[in-house]
Amino acid sequence: MSTPDRPAPSPVDHRAAVATETARFVAAVKGADPATPVPSCPGWTLADLIRHAGSVQRWFSVLLRGRIQEPPRSRDVDLRLPVGEDGWADWLADGATEAAGAFAATDPDTPMWAWGADHHARFWARRMLFETLVHRVDAELALGIRPRIDRALAADGVDEFLVNLPFAGLFAPKVADLRGDGETIRFRSTDGDGDWLIRLRPDGFGLDPAGGGVDADATVRGAAADLLLLVYGRLPLDAEALDHTGDRELLARWFANSAF
Image (cartoon, rainbow, N blue to C red; front, side, top):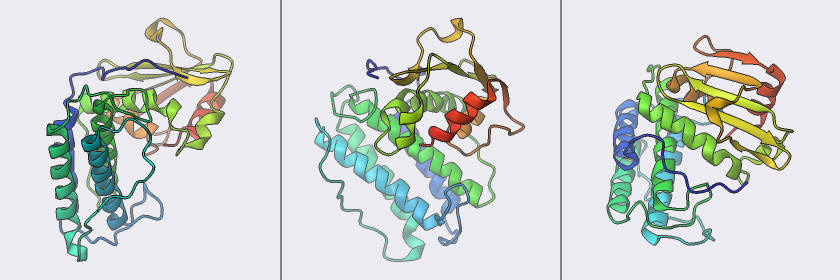
């Protein structure tokens, strides 16, 4: 399932977007009750969500500063958690400051170990961005705020998800069941460029370079933001905003095994 290093398909500044998305996250949760349940992350409260997102930022920042060349043996990092329940928003903002420092100190083209397809420092900035963005959406949904996602970021996020999913077996073990005999699934954006063709093979699955030149066994169409929420399980396939055609059993198998 090896895939050559593949840069982002759009001119998204992932490092700057981490700061922007974190600021939106912070604005949403500032003053909110940290015990608020987060329906899109069953069992989590707002405090759990913030702790997860901020911990990811700090952990990735450690990896970037260390320019790691092999899988880390430990995930221990000094989180410096807030003392009081009213400190979560500021603690989250501090994580973005740490990330900005790590970005500034590390050329995005620096070769690094990464669990996904792109073994460069830029992988970690891109991954951090979509961890932050999706959990910002989770927080807004929990607080009754209608999420808004920049179209370019959404399309880049769909691409990032689909490019890296074949390598995510360590924490998404069901992807091992996404095998087939050449069946194809297309995700097509209806509000701009964005056309992704997934092919299931006997040895695994991945993006098909043939792209738009192939008829798919099943197709899902929607705005890029809705496709992003779909692949991350924040929007159901039968949502009004989405249209799907073709093999429903194939789509059901995909979504049953592609949870990230």
